[in-house]
Image (cartoon, helix red, strand yellow):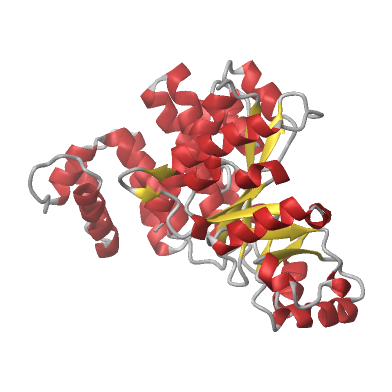
Length: 403
């Protein structure tokens, strides 16, 4: 089926700032068009096909998908392709006035599928809501917190979980957590938590940067090995990575030298980039890291066909580095002084220009619900299907590397 909609995602955070799921929405090439029932069925089937593997099961591990739904979708076959315990459909509360819709919703709930109600009047919620939905969306405003607390306290005693939006600042996030909300949607995945600024690099990150410089300069294996040996945790991670990543060594690799040779320089550089971000100990939020990994991988996959594998690995690095200033709590120009990067990567980071920049910009647009998605994809000759496939694949890959 021809797709004319782009998938955009927004992470849902729990009170510990972990990503518990993604809300997926569809964006039309022409923003005014709402997907028809047939298109929606096709899109849900497509999502299921990408992330629910016949042998490996649910590729998004612990994550739940929140999908915007229309009543007609509720009784379609494509709903059976998604695991009910990881699926939540969101509907407008007013749709439940239709008895057929209400019956379909109750049928799905009985089968374990989650239902999120939007635009519910909390004052009129009553006890019956728990039989109909598992989540309710609450509009969080910083004003009149006491009245909100009263409304929420009724829900807290039920088994309904509350999703607050829009939660745009960390102080709103803290207020929501204090009010007992379970998940939050906002732009927090792009904002470091206050207090994590300016801490610069920790010892482990300094060694990783040194290794990146050396790999960049094609230093010989023995030199890389001697720097790696100074950090036992890093050496352990490299051996673990080589032995788990299916490099087909045939037997367990136990020497660092052999690990470096097997991995090769460019893949090693990419692995170090991933490690640099995960080695951050400043109080950054886990969502920032996950966003960086998804962004890097998505940008890489988008560029693979047009530019080839080696360039695509550089785009991954650009994607990861595009959030490194926030992960490390230092300005981008300082990050770029700390490390020598390929000129094209620098152009992509500073202006989204050069040959990598547009792929990075498109990956970013997919996480911002920005209306630039279709024009950026067009300029790169990528179809909605190309972009959506890469997006879901990047989400699945991220679960496997950040676990």
